[in-house]
Length: 258
Figure 1 (cartoon, rainbow, N blue to C red):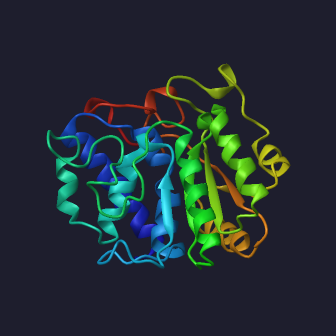
Figure 2: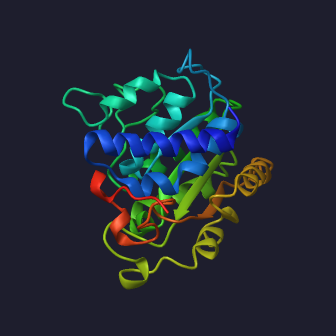
């Protein structure tokens, strides 16, 4: 599917999931919709009919509270019927706030505890290197998640082992769950930090599909270092409360678009 159309479908599904369930992490989900659209619509190799295909590329959402966006990307990419999104957050539904790999086709690992996902992605990339496999690993972490020490432990391990098959996106929207990072703990300069840990780094507009595709292509060509894409995004992209702490977790009453 063309990536712009896929991004629109992901955003529409996020809106509908919140409207029907009465809850959801809209901010984090909407800020990565374009990244996911580019990954699932253009960059990654996968087979939704055979989700455990050995040669598939792996994706790990480290910022697990943005699970709604991944569910929408998977559904619109053919992993399961789009109609299943109607049951988000219902009792007994596999589609809860955080992804569950045991219950959802296409989810590589259950995430939600911040900082852990990048370590899992790094381990998968290391396994691929040991197996001389051609598949790549992609992960998305949050900028506030970069407060976690485990992020930097994974970053050191990946650089030390020259994992050129690993690409990490940092969803750089400037917000944590209830405040601006400038009022809590600053993480900038992010690009310089990742580069100092031995990563090849690109900084892009996280809502520009051509920028994202080009960065993925450039980093895929770097074989001796892991790659980091600092994706400058707007939290809650498209909402009336976009770019504010109010966009983090909203109810249907707050679902107003700009």
